[in-house]
Image 1: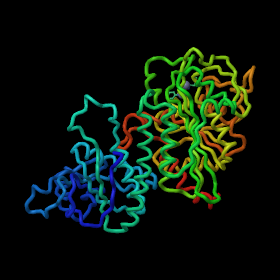
Image 2 (image 1 turned 135 degrees about the vertical axis):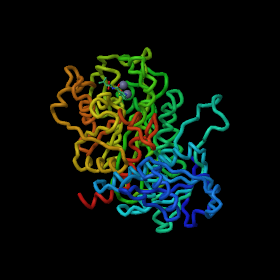
Image 3 (image 1 turned 90 degrees about the vertical axis):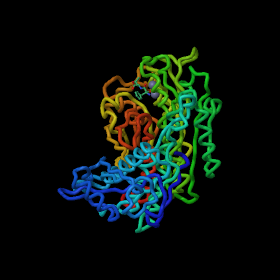
Image 4 (image 1 turned 60 degrees about the vertical axis):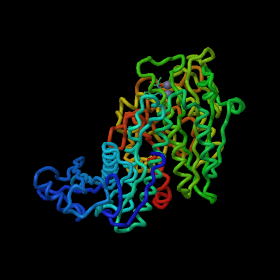
Length: 512
Ligand code: BES
Ligand code: ZN
Ligand code: ZN
């Protein structure tokens, strides 16, 4: 829930009131699970009876007030969650994902019991610093507690669960580190949930204006700089890509830019997100079945703006700029025709063979304009760009295409740490050849083979020599591998990867 508070305490858990108290227990071979000494006897008993072994996703629930012999706990329910085995083959990213899943399992248990206040005993794990444990747990709980009920009006019951209002983390060691980690987890999860909220809005609830308003609000609250190019500005700047896509629409487009500046000399990272608020395909219209999902075609834009919410909160040492080219793709009477030729911002002309390949058209202008205006050291774009990426990678990896090994390495690592895996695809002259046009500099489709790569080849014409990476999230922005902390519907993908990328920026500088 947007307003959920998370605090950290050293006070003994049985002196604290909550609707649900959660402990974690690690599985061992032929032995009772490892757990907090306070619940050891219970867990041992359950293990002897064969009811609980500490396997991942296993649960043991009891009601402490019901046992007069036991030290009275102020919590109404106690839940022990299995953590699984301490597998030596696991790396840090695996452990973090396990913790996020445990957080998600915790949130699911809260929903089941309608618990509003939650108390969590932060587990010890020898392999990872407690700060990371608390960060991943907090992230998992808040991501798992996500719901979107804004439009459920008359069917909503008073008794419907509305999510957690208060979370307390108990730790008897390194409270400072637990607090720091929890805060980082909260920032990342809240940002990802903000992106999910934007994506869940229907096409008539989230238009280019909403992107502009969201950015302006963030700028006002946190002292960031917001610029919004209107249609007239785009005409002056010759942004034929976004204007061409918007031609068939009665809703004006917008190019939103939001800048965070640390106030000292630093690298600049530019993030560009596709903000198609609804994609009908235009004149090359999409089939009716499933078209409603195209309200999610703005998930890239949502990811970059939501990232800025965490950036504003954490104030990193690098300059970060987010740009969202925003419009819908409609087929009104003035709509762009297949065969039309447009001029992009950087002067490149393009033959529009298929009006459904609109993402690259708006990103092209945004990339070229963003690079000219902000002179970034690196640029990353993120977009629900091609159906082809779903054929290649399914719903488990986002596609990455880049002109820079160093930037790719950073993104691969950030995605891994965030539990948002990324797979790099190649790009070379052979793919670029597929988008050569007979009548213009390039054309906007390169045929079926390698569709994700030829879309990226198009974008590569607008980044010049700037280190650039493109993330195709068409398979992961929604229907992403389901886990306890990844719900059905929009996943908020990209946000936590970007946050991890930004947090670790300085660390990489030392290596390169
Ligand atoms: N928004 C779509 C891509 C998409 C497809 C996202 C399925 C999520 C799920 C994009 O604008 C599009 O329509 N791309 C076309 C490109 C083609 C015409 C070259 C596609 O992938 O079919
Ligand atoms: Zn399209
Ligand atoms: Zn699209």
